[in-house]
Length: 202
Ligand SMILES: N[C@@H](CCC(=O)N[C@@H](CS)C(=O)NCC(=O)O)C(=O)O
Image (cartoon, rainbow, N blue to C red; front, side, top):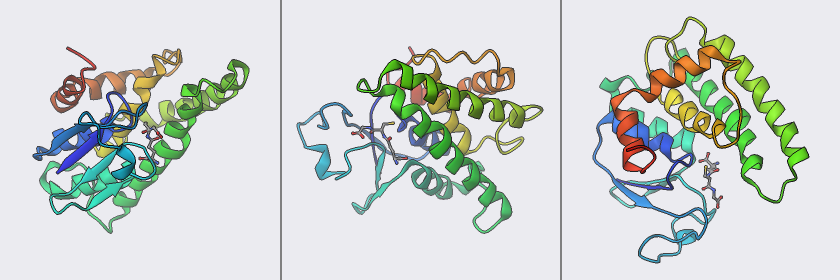
């Protein structure tokens, strides 16, 4: 398998999932700025939509969209408990989290990275994000992970986007359960390994 990624982008989520799953894969750097691979290949020939992540299977099939990719990875390593079994209510609970993270958190951050959006408009997006972190804080009270006592691919995804609070100057101290959860996830060996592989930590 190949994972097309950009350091610190949302592709860190499937990177973490692959490390947690212990699956063999080749990370392929795809710049989200130049949309070129290191060998000069036009990334739009890999993903016509231009974004990471893309997971390429050994038969050349390409899978897009982070929430689908991380579930695929989890299902390749069922003993690692990264996602509840398909068809169970808990699996839908995981999908509920992945959808929430994708649409309410991840895409809530996206305008903040856009230099064309004026600062006064960004404040509105930041306030919306803060309300989502307030909700997450309440959900994480008394829980080690989003799904309860087990780490899941939803934690890897939320960890990835929560890392962006720092460069975007969103203070997490009003959300102590989110802060404790972020530290817990960040300390996992697989998460550390993915972050190191992307050059985000030493
Ligand atoms: N819907 C996609 C969105 C992925 C996405 O937003 N990727 C960003 C990085 S976090 C990207 O590659 N942006 C560069 C671009 O769109 O050209 C998913 O959930 O996987």
